Image 1: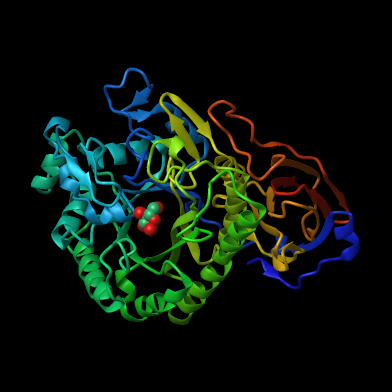
Image 2: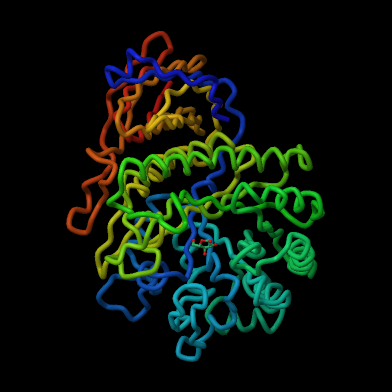
Length: 514
Ligand code: AHR
């Protein structure tokens, strides 16, 4: 993991607006795989994420689509190498009855979205539409089971419907009748969502008993596939007892992962604008974003006590920045995406990479038009956000071996408050190329980073950077490519020491080839 040895702010360098940072990169010690699933996404029936953002209907002749899913969104997500997609929620999952979303569209029950604005939905995007879309994307589906208003039977039947061989029951006959012979073989199953809040406001004892019922029933009836069952974990640092109780009381054979959620929110009652924010709000968002390091470390520490072999994965299945809804987006939780979000993404993904021994899946909230989206849509137009570009730049880490880093970072300081300015992670891929991703969240200073790459004899280096003149900048429908990655050359290599000059609020990814 990224280790902060010591924090130095050198007066001389800060006078020049150039701060110094030192990194030792252990290329020889690259052993732990960074699961590609850390680069996963999350799409909920919320605002304009599914309907309008992803799905526009099979009969739509204005927006090019395949099976009702926007072609522009499919292409963008494929380019991102999206490894998995979590659906249908979020809070919505605990109100969702999957059987209402299959069969002829004109016979599907219309529902009221009880979690998000009581909007009427026609259920035209259901299990078939979602799973077929995942196939198109080459992404693993991750289904969240309704534990609050659903039943164990409903969950068991969803597993049968999606995973069992043709002809095994009326459920698979129904699947075939509705157009799908062979099973989709869904591996990832979340059992409940935020069960300590919108998912039922349960005590840990109640959740654990119920979880054991679900987890047993979902896998005990000759299921053909080994399911990866994910238990609900905590959503903030006051809930570590939740992790402790799960690890202690759920038998090892009944779970494969625990999920945690972390949103970078300044203040739940006053989240602030997504694009017109002050320096103080920017700093507070970065403080919140950095909390992920401690949250992951502490949860891992608890898990290590019960599971030193690291069998159980820690899954951050909701993360990202959360601001006030931007009315321009005409949808709940729609927000503009700026360089501030690129900073959250850069540092958070570095934290996940560095904790790859335990963090084996993560899902950014949410894919299109909701919270920290990678894509925004307006009618037939689509834009890629700064967060999209960070995920695209970082995709080189997917399934590569993490090279541990030790970091001495300067501080990013505002009104006497301090947080590390620089975060970094590195990996070596199957072809032997090394990728180093760096984020400088300081919006006032250039950060000079000296990286000792001992043990890696680089012959060629290339780089890309994402930045803009101001942290408030993002892409708009009028100016869709204002913030895009550019080629980066402000580095030098001498005696195995790589010196990188990172402009304020920038994300850099370097590729080194032997
Ligand atoms: O992502 C939006 C909401 O945030 C999800 O529905 C819920 O799980 C979380 O509180």
